[in-house]
Image 1 (spheres, rainbow, N blue to C red):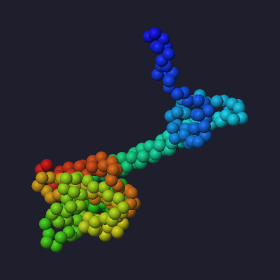
Image 2: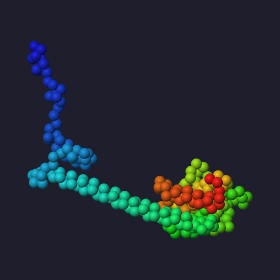
Image 3: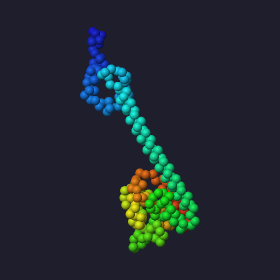
Image 4: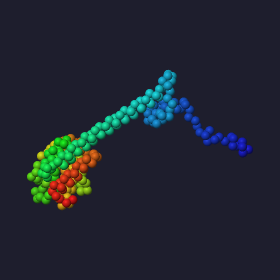
Amino acid sequence: MTSEKTRSTPSAHSARPLVSADSVRAYLREHPNFLAENPDLVELIAPPGIAGGRNVHDMQQFMVRRLQDEVGRLRNYQGELIAASRSNMSVQTQVHEAALSLLEAANFEHLIHIVTTDLAQMLDVDAVTLCVEQSDEDGPRRAKTAGVYVLEPGAVDALIGPRRDILLASDMPGEPAVFGPATRLVRSQALLRLHASRVAPVGLLAFGSRDGDRFHPGQGTELLNFLARMLERLIRGWLHLPA
């Protein structure tokens, strides 16, 4: 009796309802975007040939379109990578040229002239200035050297943050105390803290551009930081300051 009862009991597999081809066909008719919304299933389907019959749609066309879209997306991504690489290479070349120019300064005054006059053209920006903090009851004022400005104590921290050495800002006007007459041209800026010496006041190297996207948050700062650190050492050397 036990064996008869065992034979008469349906298995879990046989009790599972089967999905018929008609129900699948009906579901796909009611949900025509199902495969488009589940593209991973397309790879599991054996596509019919082009001559599959009057009522058989060519799934190969769908798969080809999908591959074409993917190829187009990859080409666009490749184009963006190439453009970014060329741009980075151009910036790297500009910074190297600027660094070599700083090294060729004949004296401290010549170094300051290169920074505040020549670097703007080399780096393709509209303004480059140097700022230094100094106590002054009248507040920020212009130093005797063109392109060099004196700031109130604590101004650098206020501009870029007390625990930051660089600030990149896009789509915002420049600070008059930093850029002076060139402020009206500035729409994006890069501000870099200068630590020339422990006995020297805090300084600031500022780049300004009329292009609102020339400098922006998230942009790589390695090259600009290199230039600022190099300038620190040159200033320290020319003025015979301790580290």
